[in-house]
Length: 160
Image (cartoon, rainbow, N blue to C red; front, side, top):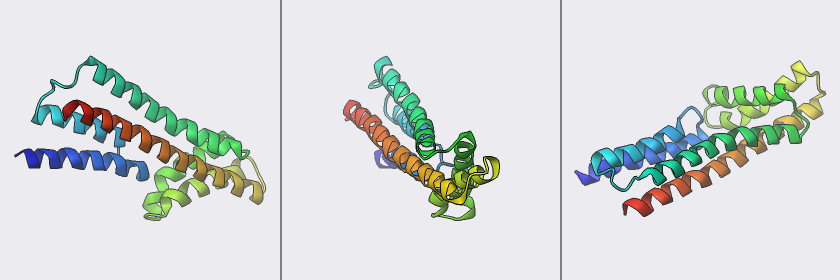
């Protein structure tokens, strides 16, 4: 049975990392679900209040990293709130419209179109802002991947 339990936990952890690239997947919830499943299947004994406090702080950091990276990426290249909103909408819609590449094209087009339509930016500036949104997204994925890896390492240090 242990193999089945670890497979379920492993799939939850893998889903958390897939959520880095597919924002529709609730990566943080899958990661926390893996921790909870370990407790249900094996034992909650390794998880004291320090573990949950540290993991909770990492969860807050994950949400903050996502938001801040998007803002910095768009604003650094001259974007506005419209570009940030366009990038966010593009990030959510892009993968459904264009599977696989939509995760990159969506934020780019969302930010660029929002700046063209709302702020009447010229095409060159809008493209730069769209590029900034992609840089923000990629840096967010890398940052969140590192944070999630640290969360998992802390988990494994306690349970193994």
